[in-house]
Amino acid sequence: MPLLRPLLIAAIVAAMSAAAPAAHAATLFDNLAGSRDGADPLLSFGPLADSFSTGANAGLVLTQVTALLKSDNAAVVGDVLVSLRADSGAGPGSLIATLGTLSSAAVSTTDFAAYTFKPAAGVQLSANTTYWVQLEAVGANAVEWSWSQDLSGTGVAGGSNYSATLGLSSNAAAAPYQLSVSVQAVPEPASVALMLGGVGLVGLTAAARRRKA
Image 1 (spheres, helix red, strand yellow):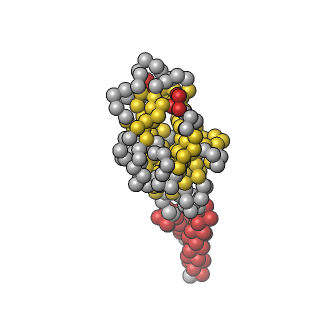
Image 2 (tube, rainbow, N blue to C red):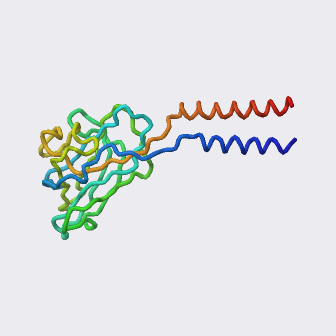
Image 3 (cartoon, rainbow, N blue to C red):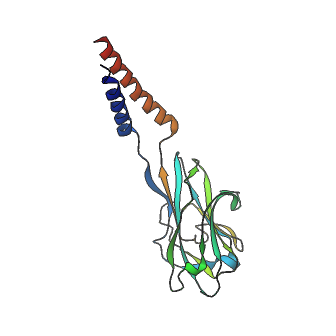
């Protein structure tokens, strides 16, 4: 009979692993495939930013953002800083997390290319909340961020964009910068606890039946 306990524990662990909802990837904003209709320089127009919203989705973790960038002058080298910002009501507000930095020396001077930035750890996002992805020049550089008038991409039409020079604009009034925002949807702790509690009760019931037998 002592062998039954480790076997039961192993069965419960296996059931928990099988029943636990897996995280899955999703996209909240994406206009990377849109037409490239223009670009703004980070140094003289920036900081530049696009907004995105989580909607009613809960349990989202920001995993990466990707922007279309190009450098106009390889001889002018400085860093690009990418950050996640709260919504101030008039554009990007307080810093939530730094998503990465990139030397302009690594940015193509021949054509716009996609550059991906990932936070050191996933950033938890709140439901029904607007956030901003901001790009800014740290020191002089010639990096530009392309913008597109195509609003058909995921999460694009209802958003806004910002330039320190031009101010806040809806995406319908002024074309947003080309960006994608990727997240993972993970189960809420309460849901996981309920699921694991159910599995635990099943295991306890099975053990009780064995003892009774």
